[in-house]
Image 1 (cartoon, helix red, strand yellow):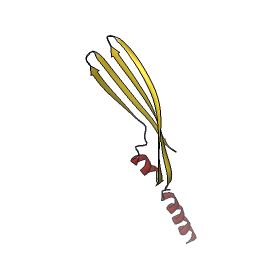
Image 2 (cartoon, helix red, strand yellow):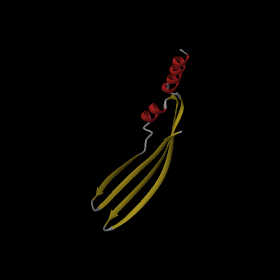
Image 3 (cartoon, helix red, strand yellow):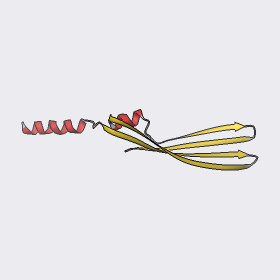
Length: 94
């Protein structure tokens, strides 16, 4: 009987999600390559952001705040000028 109670307590503790304050910290790296007449110019910038929520599980917080690593690229053409902008996010839950 003691073994069953102990086993049930261990299972209960491992399946319970811990709700606490969570912070998503992201670093964004933006790179823009502008090409015109055979020459190109590259500009880069970096920015950061933090979002904090109280009493949330890590899984739900990561999903709700989109606290994931991602990358996107956009191409714009203005006559003979082509501009390719890439944004990369590196995020983690603290």
